[in-house]
Image (tube, rainbow, N blue to C red; front, side):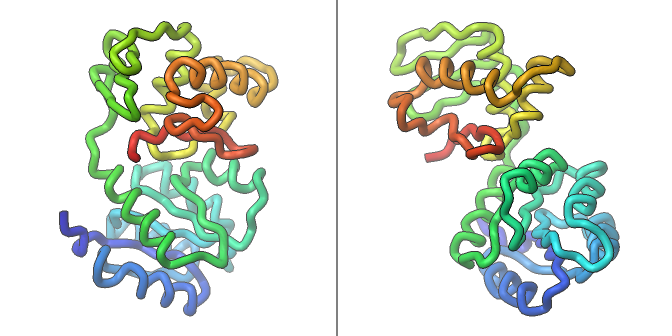
Length: 232
């Protein structure tokens, strides 16, 4: 499918970074519109309705996380963050605010192109509904029944494991933070989210992964959360 008509919004106050991103995107992936501040970026996102946003954190007028949260409050557009800051806590905060991906600076243009294409492709897919059947790496997961089979053999999951797996599948390709997963399954309960999740994710992997030691379906984002990968 030709994606050259997709509009990509780049919010970054550094002209050289905007130029690098623009050269990576045009002409094979899409068209680019640029903004150098957070306010002009949110205005452009509302007015231009881009297919994807590439957002820098070091903006002169407002924090990138606030820009992300603002756009996410009224739009589901994929947001890829570029930043020289790389702490686990900051990455988790950005994903909690609604970012879909995070690329540290300096970055490879080849990697940027691949991440952009992946987010555009996922955005085109129909949302995962309760009747969704997914096949990945030998596992067949039916969210309607619910049921899961690996290589034709039925697998039993507990209620909690099902809730976790459903949440991850509904956000396939995107890292879901520990806090987001904990809230989705346990609500406002208090406790050690990472420890709770570690135990249950280990149980899910043991049942559905071909090799639980080297998982391909449920991928760990160290210190941040987990991601369901349905693509090879």
